[in-house]
Amino acid sequence: MGLRQCLIVCCIAVLACAAAEERPVAALSSLPGIPVLGPLKGTPAVSVTWYGVSTLLFDDGETKVLTDGFFSRPFFAGLDSIAEPDTAQIARMVETADLHDLAMITAVHSHFDHAMDLGVVALATGAAVFGSESTANVSRGAGVAESKIV
Image (cartoon, rainbow, N blue to C red; front, side, top):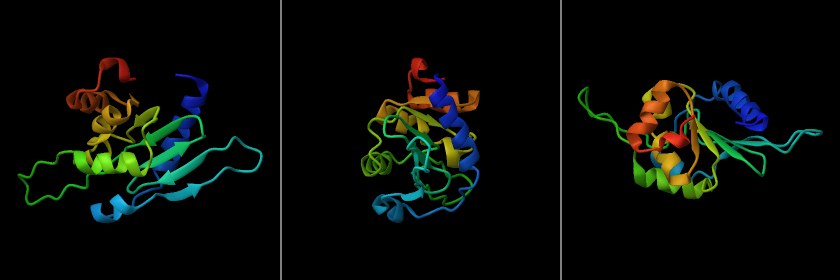
């Protein structure tokens, strides 16, 4: 991983901690993203777009990095409910957010509401997955190739 990607990951870690609001799935599928930070004067042109919870897209026009990529918003009917990625919703968000050329995705931490969708997003976009061993295991469970897990 190059210095550029390491710096982006550091920015992600700091900024992702501030995002906490959740939105219903219907609102997300039509949400183009909320710009959080545009290019600052005298700095490289990096924009940050918020897609709910702690999903942030960092884009410098050359490289795109995503935190969490949690788009599913599962409904729990009871304690025995099983949460699974909503592949249709993830596909809609890959289109809506134009994530086809995503370079990397990372989870802030590996709770379901941060890491559950990241393997499916990585498969849909070809992105590398950067994170802890538990994040790597979530990715492996989704079928992400070992060569794509950092």
